[in-house]
Length: 381
Ligand code: NAD
Image (cartoon, rainbow, N blue to C red):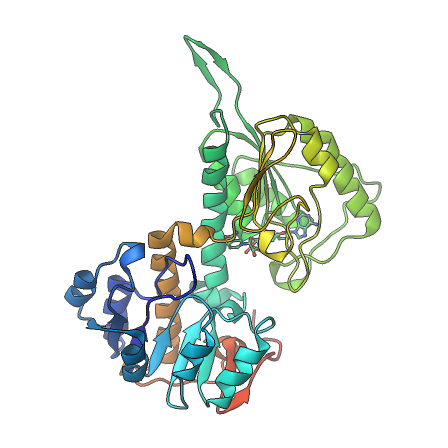
């Protein structure tokens, strides 16, 4: 099959879905690779590097779509891009089908097959293709770097000839993929790092990374906020109150807060309230990774950096992976390459789109002229 990657058209998007290295691996599966001229430039991959990797560089998106059987992209397609699909073509990209129903119907009406990278089930076997996790890992790392860039002090404590510097205190709220990456980055920079999650089973992981898990003063045994698949369920009102009380107690002493708390298919829970922001010291920083879904802090403005009246910086950027486009493209292109490995079992360039396979079925949202979203629950873990 011919696998082609166009230049991303979404404003400010720097990533690319194919790298010279991923293209070499795709060719080993028997596929031919094409790339639109300049598609990798913002991620640091120049056309010549693709040519050296055996990729055909094509001028313009229209020709790229025309010549490709499988189109691999990062962002959800535009209407114009869907207009270039037909029943002989497969599109692989993020799609967020729950929020892009009309686009999904349009793709199905064209007869195209669509695989949504954000719908890859979070089961062990699919980890190598889990683009949400590979991008969340980058977001967690970058959140700490961004916080450091806006914070006027060191992370690590120092004793210098010019005086003693106290270490920064960082609180990470939500210890999923992004949260754990933030914890690892924060501790490696030498900050005293605290973390909280409603799922008590992550306490051990948090502590093994050198951070301190924040336990609540809660009468009963700590409520287990775990749902299946490593996700959380909504907290009881009593538990939430205990959580907010603990955060209120911590707020005056914490320099940097990174919030990542999320429950699938819901607005982000409000966990860092206005009075907590007001209680923080001037120069403190909040990075709200949940900004896309309303924010864990209601003072967050999506895609903006705001400074509050009491001098707290709140960052609501939603494009952290794109701000690290080389790394993000490398990991995303590898996720796609692994997906293609599963789709090409004989390594002969022939695709077997097996709708009996939980992972392929879970991520396929349009096939044979039909919308195939939402998928049935996966059988395996
Ligand atoms: P995840 O599901 O792995 O982690 C979310 C964590 O939040 C889970 O551990 C969950 O138990 C915890 N949580 C849920 N409710 C909580 C509560 N009330 N209190 C404390 N913890 C709670 O998700 P992820 O992949 O790590 O993504 C985290 C967030 O980062 C998401 O909102 C995602 O959209 C966002 N993200 C942002 C960017 C960006 O550029 N800003 C990029 C990628 C991901």
